[in-house]
Image (cartoon, rainbow, N blue to C red; front, side, top):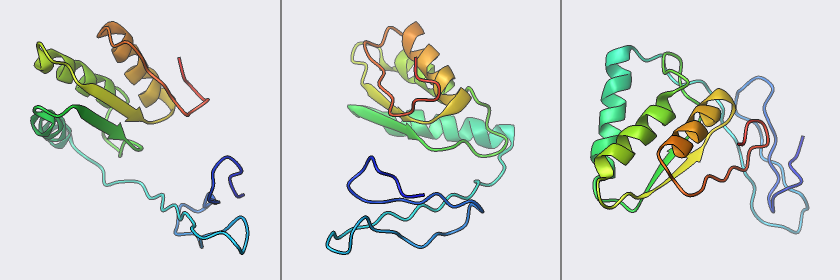
Amino acid sequence: MPSKSSKFATRRCPSARLCAPTSPSPTRLGTTTKINEPGPALVQDQVEALAQAVIRRAGTASWTALAGSLPPGVPETFYADVISRLRSAAHEAPHAIAVDASGPALAHAAAAYRTSSSPTLRSSSSSTAP
């Protein structure tokens, strides 16, 4: 079903396979194709290595984006854990963190924002926004 909330149409794929792009009108250019496949399953060592890589790469960045569905083996608290660790590592100059997630991962991330004294959290998801 095409999305009516954006300039370009999208269609969700019931089988989580590549879908043909759709367009709201033949006179508009641009389409969005969503490819929704689950990521590979990760073991705990890989999850920790991923978290450390995010924190290390954030370094002196002014923004960090945490986005997407979590692959199998990654706990629902992953984004929240990374947010807490980024806030702890930031010391005097905390930077902004954007989270694009849904369900329990977003709920845990929102809780981490509240407990880390971040001023705002905005979500485009209506499912579990605080």
